[in-house]
Image 1 (tube, rainbow, N blue to C red):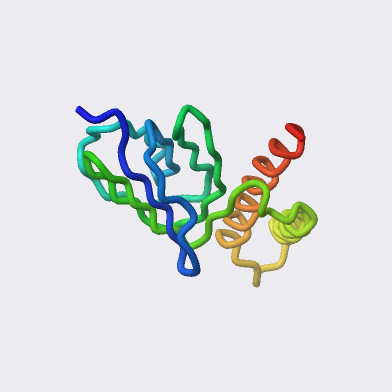
Image 2: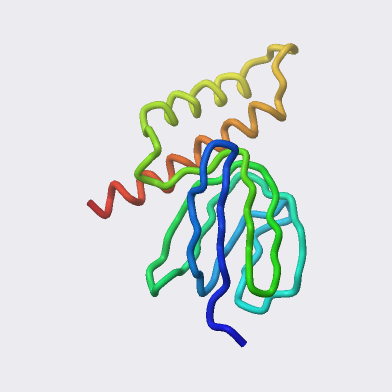
Length: 138
């Protein structure tokens, strides 16, 4: 059995990752999936969360929001609506998005789409979490 699998992470605007990975963790709707070479084939919907993967002995982290993942024994393809590396995240913008979503959730406005506000809050918090982890390392 191979020691790695091909990992590709793609958004509508770009290819973020094309690498040989030793392992990966992806946020599926039902929880995180751990992927190793030779994994059983599957297709899953992604939720908002963090993708981590090891390639060349180094661990890499990305923020992801929605999409799909196809897992084959030798290849994992992630088609994400949005994905960012930690260093690409605008912390100030993410904080403002978190604050807006939090205000919407705390309001008693019947016009607020609470599911959408919860998704926005989760995405902003995920982005802030991995961006701050990188800032601490500097």
